[in-house]
Length: 178
Image (cartoon, rainbow, N blue to C red; front, side, top):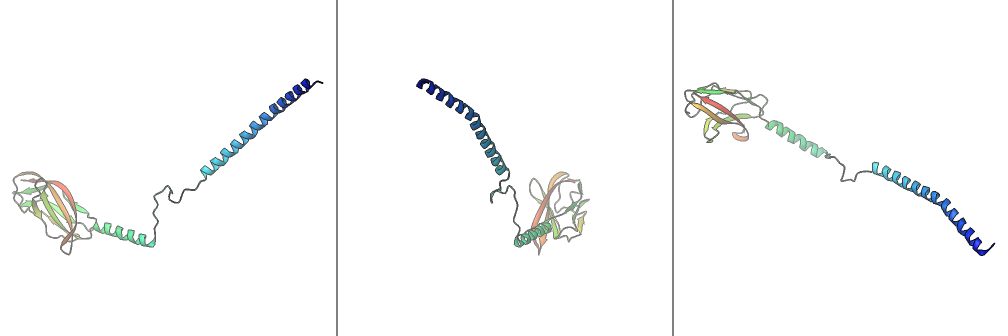
């Protein structure tokens, strides 16, 4: 055999051996990629959140914060004002008599004082004495004489402690003066 034929055989043998290794290399690379993808998915799904990234708005509660929250809840409950009053107040004779009713509910924690003002001017048209818990004022007059008509008013429900107003809730209404 000539040298030329030997070279040709060697080149053909190398090409055949390279062709037979190519599918094997591709298969091995695909297996490695699949394994890496599976490991990556597993780690992503089972990752633990960072200490400062819990994804919730949880509050750490200690005995001190529990006591503080309890105190706040007590103060809120004590500061609530349960409003009890009639609607459609009608005042006769310019405000001398009425069908009006304002009460200090049994559910309240403080004495209440009521103040009624005209919405447009802020003029005080009635101030009540202090009303104990569970008591009411009714058929009360206005402290000023008003011309006949309808008036928009603001009723201040004021919590009183030791003679001082400590909290106020305002409601609005309309009164009719005949």
